[in-house]
Structure formats: structure tokens, C-alpha cells
Length: 233
Ligand SMILES: [Mg+2]
Image (cartoon, rainbow, N blue to C red; front, side):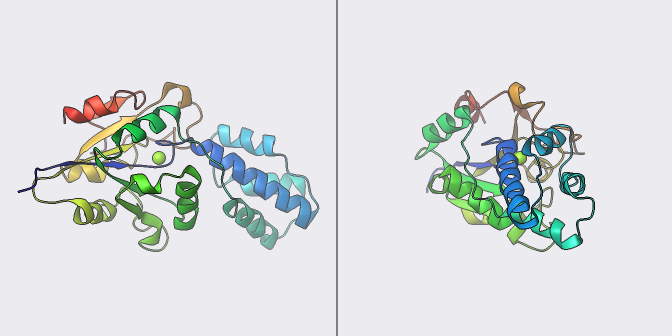
């Protein structure tokens, strides 16, 4: 009988790479579209400042209105579409790159990530990490309107079905205490929060509260000691 294994499943945004970099890339793409198509100037610095103040989707109408108070609804749609259509250029967190590299071959790994499935797949491609994972689940592809985004348990059930055999254990590694750990905790997985001090002010979902049942079992400041921690699970 094969030995029971530990399956290591990761979140993507702000766990493996800084999501702020993706947002800024999208701002550049949207600003270029506004300049070329609408003939208006939207400043990327202004969008980034709003992002850092905690605005997410709401910043698009704000900056477009500042650039042109008379813009129409289609302008806003095109502006946001240009954000989505960016071709991302991204880099893994250094500690994540080292950890993933050291785990390839030794661990069976997976990825569960929320968001528009095409955008998330473009991020995976930009980071060149698809080959590290035995199975990738884009929750946005499971149903409409974020129905199966975390904390919904479906993606975790599907991951168990895809990778798990009798006796296997699972661990989920994420950054967002409001949604990442509810389902894995509930299904008997281990849960590890990566809370990098240098990104505490810039993480996209930094203002979230800990969900009921969603407290991580282990908190690490980066992935440098991840493999040692996994050995003790
Ligand atoms: Mg995340």
C-alpha cells in the first residue's frame, strides 16, 4: 500500500506573489486605454494611492470621473475591461520562489484561487508555476457570481477528490483570514497563514477580519521555514 502523503495546497494572490503588482499592471493598461480611446489622462499614481487607501473596485469610477466628469457607463465598462485585459508581468515573493523550488518533486502540490478564472490563469502563466502543481482549481470557473469562491467548501472537496487517497492529509496555505481557512479547517485540513510583515500595509485584503472557524492553525512570517513546519504536521 502506498504511504499516506501530505498534500500541500496554496492560495495564489498575496500568498505566492504581491497582488498589488498585478493591480498596478492593470492600472497601466486601463490608463493607456483611457488615453487612446477616450483621450483623457488617468494617473496611475492616483489609482495606486487609492488602492493603498483601501479602495478596490470602487476606485475605477472615482478616477474616471476625476478625468472626465461627463463620461458614460460604456466608458467605465471599457476602462475596467482594459484593466482585466492586461498581460501581467509578475514575480513570486523571493521566499515563495525558494520554498516552491525546494518542494518540487518531494510534495504533491495544488492551487485553489478565487477571482476571474481567465485573469487567474494569466497570473499563473506569468509566474510560470503551473508545472509545480498536480491540480489547479479556479473557483471562478465553478459557477457564476463568485458562488463558489472561498469560503465555499466545493473547491476543497474537489481538491481532495483530485489528489487525495485513503489516509492522505491536506494543508492549505493562504494570506486571507476572512476566507482562506474556514473550509479547510472544517474539513480537517491543517491551515497556515503567511503574514509577511513587509506587506501588512499593502496587501489587497489586509483589512479583513478573522472569519468564524477561520483562524489559521499556524502563522508564519514567510515561507523560509515552511518545509520544516510541514514535516511536523
Ligand atoms: Mg490571497
